[in-house]
Length: 486
Picture (cartoon, rainbow, N blue to C red):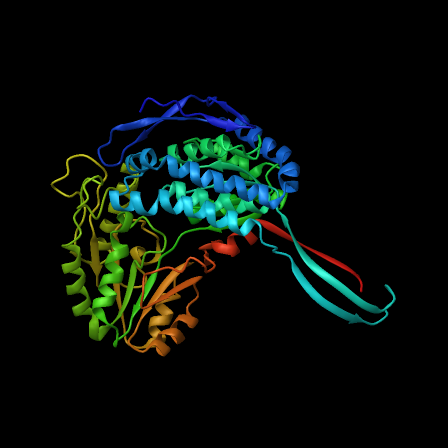
C-alpha cells in the first residue's frame, strides 16, 4: 500500500515522532502498510488539542453537529469500495463480514447518533412541595436534570471491529458535544485513520477529532493519565481495562469500559437442539471467534449432551477455514501469530487438564501461511479448568454438563465475567426466569441475534457503563441538576 498514513493532532496531519511500524495481513503474512508511531509527546498534544477545542464544540448547536455527522456518513459511504478490501486485509475479516458488518455498520452508527444529537435529553421534573428548613424557606420547587457533554474523550478501540467500534464511540461523543482523541488497535489502524480523514474533510473543527496510533503502550497510557482527558472509552481486554481504571483514578476520569467475556449458553433438557446448534455455530466461527459475546461455555443438561456434541461436530464440517477473500470461507485467520499462539496454548492446556478434544482446529494442514485456527470443540470440561475461566478470543467452544436449573445458573455465574449469556429452552417462561437469575449485562433467549436498541455492557470484570443507542449517547454526558422556586 503506497498511501502515507499520518496522525491528526489539532487539525494538522503529521508523521509519527517514532517512525512507523508494519501492519501485517493475517491471511498471508504480507505487509499491508506502515502505520505511524506516535510519541508520548504527541499523545499529550492530541489531548491538549481536544481539551482546547471542547468549549467551542460543546457550544455548537446540536443541528450543526448532526449535519456534520450525516456528512461524514455520506463521505464514508463514498469510500466503501476502498475501505472493504482494506479492512479485510488488515483485520482478516471474511468477505461476508467485511462487506456487511464493518463499513455499513460504521455508517449506520454515524447516522444514528446524528439523529439522536438533535433530541432533548434533559429530564424535566414535576414541582416538589418543600417545607421550610433552616436552610431556606419552603415552597413549590421546580427542577430539571440537564445533560452536559463530559469533555475531551480518549476512545481506545480493539482489533476485531476497528472501524465499527470507533464509530460507535466517537459518534455519540461528538453528538453529545464532546471532543475526541482516537487510538485504534495497533494491529489494524488504517480504516480508523481513514475515518479521521473523512471527519476532517467534512469540516469538523480543528482539535475536535484527533487520532494517534502506536504499537507501544506508552502513548495510550499518556492519554489515560492526562489531565486534559476527561473520560476514557475503551473496548478490549480486562487486563488493559484494569490498568486504565488505575491510571485514570488520579484525575477522576469518567470511564466506559467494555471488557472481556466468557459467554455461557445454558441448554435446557427441553431445548430445540437445531436452534441451539445454529446459534452456537453462527458465533463459533464468526470473525474467527474474535467476538466478546460468543457463547464459548456451553452448559448443557446431561440428557442432551451427546446429541448436542454430535450436532456441533456436523456443524463444524460446514465451516470452511481459509482465505478471507474467498466467498465460501466461513472462518478466516485470527489477527496475529501471537494471538494464534495464545489460542493454541489454551487448547493445549485444556487437554492437559483432562478435557477431551473432539475437534482440533490447530494449524489447518491446507494453509501454509497465515494465522489460522479452525473451529475447536472440547468436552468433559469442569468449572475449575482454565479454558472455562478465561477468555480465549478464538473459535473454541468448551462443553460442561449439569443436572438441574440451579446448577446451571451456578455454573453460568461462577466466573469473573458477565457480558453476554444465552438460555435455550422450549418453555419461554422458564428461559426468561433463568435469564433474570444470570449475573450478566445481556442475555439472549433462544437466539444469538442482538437488539441494537438495548444497553450494552457487562457485570463484574466485563466492564463499567453501557453503550448502544440512546444509552451510548448518555454515557458521554454528565448530569447537572438545576432547581428554582416555581
